[in-house]
Each structure stands twice: as C-alpha cells, then as structure tokens.
Length: 286
Image (cartoon, rainbow, N blue to C red; front, side, top):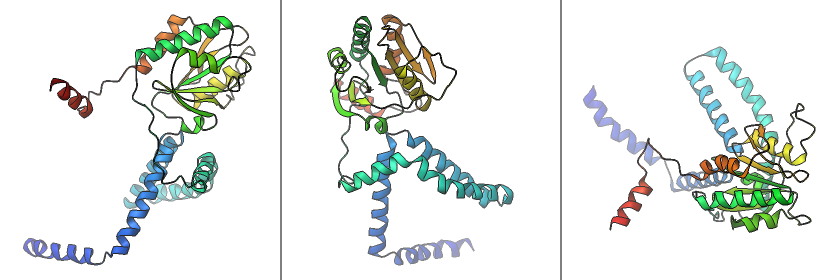
C-alpha cells in the first residue's frame, strides 16, 4: 500500500497542475497584487490592529468548525454576520481614502518610504530644545511622536512635510498666527512627516476643567495608539506628555528628555539574527 501511494502521488500532482491554466495563474497573480496593495495601505495606520483582530477571529471560527464545536461555531458565525455590517463603519476613513487613491490613479504607484529606522540622539535634543523655547514664549504646541504603530491615517489629515526634525522647524510651525499652529505635528524617527493634523478628543469626562483642547486631543490620541504626545500650554507654557490615556504635566526639559530618548534608541533584537547589522559590520571590516 505505501508503494502504491508513492507511485500515485506524482500522478495526482501532475493531474492537479494540468487543471491550472494560464488564465488561472494571471487571475491568482492579480488577486495577490490587489491584496498586497491593500495591506500596504493599511499597514501604517491604526486599522492594521483591527485587521489582525479580524484575521484572528476568522482563524478561531475555522478551528471551531473543523473541530465540530457546534455551539461555539454557531455563535462565531452569528458574530461574523454582525461584523460584516460593522466593519464598513469601523473602516470608513480607510475605505474612503482607498477609493480616493483609486480615483487618483495611485493604487499601483510606488509608496515613498520615510526614514522609519532613524533613531538619533540629535532628534531628542532638537525636540527638547524646541519644547523648552516654546514653553518660555508660551507658544501652544502639540507633537505626536510615533513608536511602533504608524499613523499615516492621522498624518493624512494635515499637510505633508517630510522634513528633518529641527528645533527651528518645530518652532516655526507652532508660531502664533501661522496656518499650521493649531494642529498637531507627527514625528517619525528623525522626520517630521506632517503638520496641522487633526487628533481625536478624549471622551473622558473626569478630566480637570483646566485642560484645554490641546490636552484633550493629546489624551484622546494616546488612547488610540502607542505614540507619545508632547503638549505645550499656550496659556501657562506648561510642558505635558500624554501616554496610554494618561497625562503627566509640569515637566522640565530634563524630565521630558528622559521620556523621549528611549523612543529614538534602536531596540536590540535578541531573538533573531539581525541580518542588516551583520552585513553592515562585515562591510566595515572589509
């Protein structure tokens, strides 16, 4: 019997490939490209976490169905029906931008890669220097410093800049009566990628009435992502940071630097070999 299996398996494999036509290959290739482009559009937004949740839910549903867990499978199937209605509402901003992207003919355009891996000490110093200067002059400011989660959906609400982070640039953006003064600046690595961005306000009703719109927007943004948000009060010049739905106020420049510096430090990957660093060291030795 094992001998027959070894003989018949290649024949079955050849039979399977014989049913695949050139049109089928083109069809699969097109679907793969479309799915890949959609993933590229979502991977640098907050929606990617929801996508991972949906994929996990589908995987659990498939396992429950395969394992003949009828009650759990029925509950998951009913939940999936609700999700089919809820997902277009949840992903409404992303779907709208995708349709706009298609209308502009940019679906297959090459995405510009920003310097995401830049983690320099100079960036920390420039942010702290600008923050202290704005606090002294009582210039209101709101800066969102990205961590792991990319915020392309938020940066799309402002003006794209993609400029090197400098103290002068930050102060120029938040100078009073400038067009981008009232919005937020998004910082990724050593690049200020967008300014004048709109942030969601927190729905926490227990906050102090002393906190204005900037502070509430900073808290609201920190509730929805892992970014660190720096706020400078326009009324008092107080420096604050918002992180994970919490706000810490009355910071000094030195204390602010302690919070910001770890973000721009390259994490050491101990679980896997860092191929990039390996080749970089090899080239330097050569």
